[in-house]
Image (cartoon, rainbow, N blue to C red):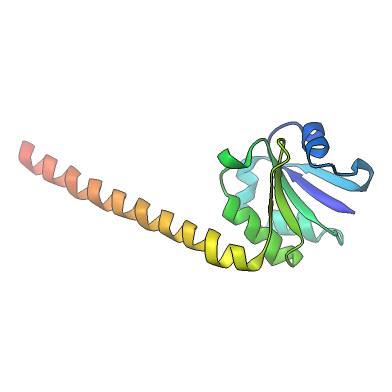
Length: 132
């Protein structure tokens, strides 16, 4: 038995595009905001002993929180699963790829966002002083 945690899109297209057997699937529809609830996702994955856990969406290129979805698969299901979309694209969960590609990418994104925030924080106060 496999689990699809369906976030957005059409579940029938998702199953058909990825050539999955509908009779061997548990499909659970969740809202994207539920991805921030770690215990909720853990309970979904651990509810039953699933062979594979999939997170399904419309298009992986535009999906937020990919790193977190991969983390959930790796942490709670021991590397068996993938992120899938309605176009048949798939990102397999792998510890090495997560550790050396997705995690550094997330850290770099946080760092860049911090730099932009600091820059505009300083710029805001300079502009405020100039007005006074």
